[in-house]
Image (cartoon, rainbow over all chains, first blue to last red; front, side, top):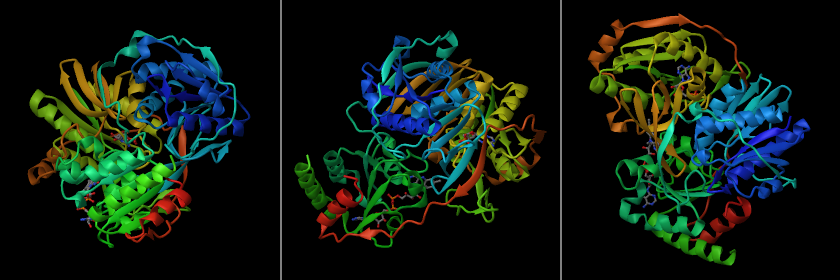
Length: 322
Length: 248
Ligand SMILES: Cc1cc2nc3c(=O)[nH]c(=O)nc-3n(C[C@H](O)[C@H](O)[C@H](O)COP(=O)(O)OP(=O)(O)OC[C@H]3O[C@@H](n4cnc5c(N)ncnc54)[C@H](O)[C@@H]3O)c2cc1C
Ligand SMILES: Nc1ncnc2c1ncn2[C@@H]1O[C@H](COP(=O)(O)O)[C@@H](O)[C@H]1O
């Protein structure tokens, strides 16, 4: 019966998003009067999950699962759900989880709700709130199947501590040839950079910065805040910044805690991708820029004057609060 | 190679989003519908296969008659024929099941869908479709090449990319990168004229059972006004971010 949560790890370490889905699973389990079981792959020490209410961890150790593989992972999670008799399976909305979840839902004959932003409104019927229409609205979805798969939006629930055992149990799912029919040939990943997907803070620059040579102050701010750097679409189209930094409707989605937009006008296609960020700050010299309508805090001013001064202040603040 | 491109018919991003009937229905009044942006990239990539490797390209939508102009647009861009499964699309699983039937009946080798629609299924259909077909699936595809029975794809992952290989039949969830944005096709006059004569086949739905129901919609609470901070008083911004927003 226990709520099953799929825990992602990287090189044996858990990410913050993993603790968030664990916290959420605990919230759902409390509502349903049951416990939380996690499934983790090649994770090493899993005891930390106990802090967020996980009672038991199915620990899969298998060299063939070193790289993420949607089909094989989905098969393993399915077998875990069956073993535990789970009625609810919780995942994050990382690129990998979004790849895996629909496969899992079909395998479990479960209804799947993606982009979920909170605990179920009710568990019988099972109704969850999700974002829809590129964050311009919410949709309440009722899942009518016996088993439910829930994809939790990043930063929608937060971390909630609740002490539990996280008792580790070895788990060896039966995997077949077919589980590996999509082969990972190579992985190309910057290891020492904060990614837009994982970042708590994203610092983003637009065409207002005039040229690639002016990004030093953006990178400095990102450095001070431990943030990822991002940019508007024209900036990556013109080759000022790499395509991987392009955020918005046609780029990467942003759901960080803080988004700082420098010299970005706030076009609707840009906002569509960053609306889910909790707190938005805009620095723009045009008080009429549409971004001011979408932002929480704004500075009307020239980025070339404001940003270097703000960086100094942020540095002082960080040193004091270190 | 027989390619099927799944086309989702969605409100243009600049549309005003409103609801009717006690917030249970999306208000389509005055809304401009378009081909889902991720599907536009996929369709253009499919045209490349057609022209360079001699593939046939059909497009499909699960939806009511109101989606036909969107399918005609795909025909005008260059697809050979269109299929509409005549039933409202209410649930990702239901759509995937209808699409699976179309793929099986048509014997397609490659199905190109989008990473997600910009309405509300939120990235369900392509993976479910692949699983129902027991076909290989690659999501977040930013590059796709096919050589005979073998496909090679690049997938965007958090913080990088991954190169994958798989044999056909294959379903992909595609996005920007499959082709460059500057290469996206816009229908020209000749295409539009030809599209009128191309087949658009309407087939009836096989099974309308669902696993989820959208019961209600809600708009976010109106956002408070932006707090403006004087550029000469940046300490105030730091204070607000730290104490009020708890963001730093
Ligand atoms: C189908 C479609 C999809 C799109 N998808 C995306 C997307 O995913 N992401 C995206 O970003 N865009 C997207 N766009 C483009 C979008 O419409 C805008 O054109 C784009 O976001 C504008 O980028 P920008 O704000 O950097 O540039 P601009 O609109 O040129 O704005 C620059 C801003 O900088 C300000 N500025 C100038 N000088 C200074 C200074 N010295 N100090 C401070 N501020 C200054 C100006 O006041 C202005 O507001 C899309 C468009 C379409 C049609
Ligand atoms: N009603 C539909 N008809 C045809 N294809 C669809 C439909 N809904 C979704 N798709 C395809 O599935 C992709 C992802 O959609 P979704 O699961 O709705 O986010 C879209 O980009 C389309 O390629």
